[in-house]
Image 1 (spheres, chains in turn orange, blue):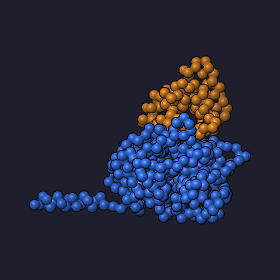
Image 2 (tube, helix red, strand yellow):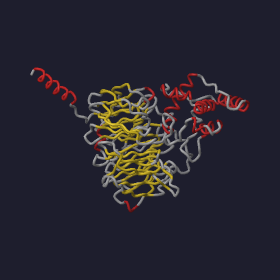
Image 3 (cartoon, helix red, strand yellow):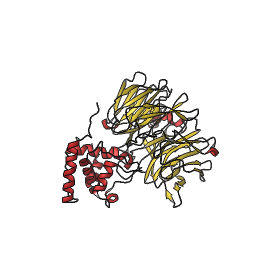
Length: 127
Length: 387
């Protein structure tokens, strides 16, 4: 049977979402999402191979736009988190909320915007 | 004297050691490591690896007509010509910033590459990889460049391709390779995402992402223009998120039925090729990515988008029913049939291996290590139109 890697329970998801929203509004931009290291590896893999099927494995773009720190720098964290979870209407970007929790999306956004961890992990080949 | 005889013997031996037919060879793209593995299907073994091909996510390949050379189209805009017999890179160029696929011309002398950035098609000399022609995919009135998808070769030294942003299909006649003659078809439907051509090279069909339907061009009757088929196949039904763009590679055809993935639905669509109307739908396990016919057309094999990409399903083309569901492992990205269809190779990306199945018994015959394998391409493609 398939392992459900991307399922966070609903109450947990809502709780994390609320917590993070609260944290974010308190100290905007400085909050770092709490994601277990196991989950971080799963998300890195997901980012590289599944997001990568449209955005490029090195995130330099493809059918979807590049997701490099310089291309994302002008966009708010909330905008990016919403884009990941809800998708973008009239584009090929689907909503990922059935596979990613809000907390996952927050963590991914932080990685994408900071860039440094991403580049290191991508270079090594996240597994 | 003795020395020169030894030298001659050594030379002859070295020549013979390399001699080998290539009809049972293939390559496997190892997407994360920028390498290709060379495999053979007579005894199912790996013959080695060629490294240093850059970013090979979403890479594809075509073969020279002598089946000795493969041209690999990398996501990073790299175009690499490799020698699969001597396992080495012949030439490698960076031809754009971001590329999606390519094709080889009818006469084998031209390689065409479709690019996302800058949007367009570039044509190269197959021997030297020197640029022969540049076709920017301009659309609209503001000189915008469109991403290009669905590039195929067609009889008469033509390449056909579609403009994702521009909603157009272009036919490029390369009879005079330095002066491509372009025929454009506009407003073919929103966001063509991939395309295929029938094995006879007559019908070019683009799948539409932005609309439920497909755009079809009869290359024998260009004046008739682009015709919409399967229009509104999802009408009145809720759209599902599309987690991976489906592919329209080759042509899954059996008798007068053709099989294509439905965009965003857990369905394979069946087309009656006599009148190009919908002949049925088959419910499947997830969103189909590749819908591929076994070469004899009796079965159709389907793989799926994430999160259902651990599964393969087999459809019987007489009953239009699923007759087998296999779970080779996480990340089944691509399949390739042997030319006569007895075995199918599948890449299982997340488990870093290739799995080979008997297509009658569905028994897994062997698995191989491969580093994040994606596309599998056998040399038999060298002699098929549109692959």
